[in-house]
Length: 87
Image (cartoon, rainbow, N blue to C red):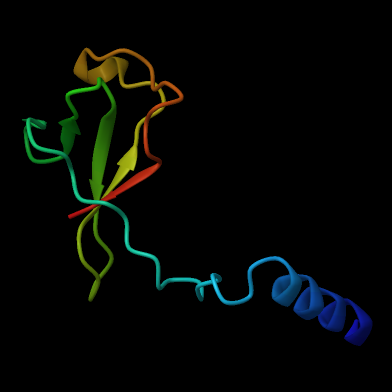
């Protein structure tokens, strides 16, 4: 187990150690201008990606990609959709 930890540490330093960020420190991009909101729970961006609102206690709102948003009358997610948007 200790060898695995050392290996991961070395690999992390070798492949972008200065660029790496701790888990939870990266902020999701905000919803783009022209975003349409459907009720209070869903949004659809201008490029056709649909997101559902989530918020854990003590954390900001995040919008999570809906892969199959048929329930709000939108097309499936595509490769150009960000997985998460910030609030």
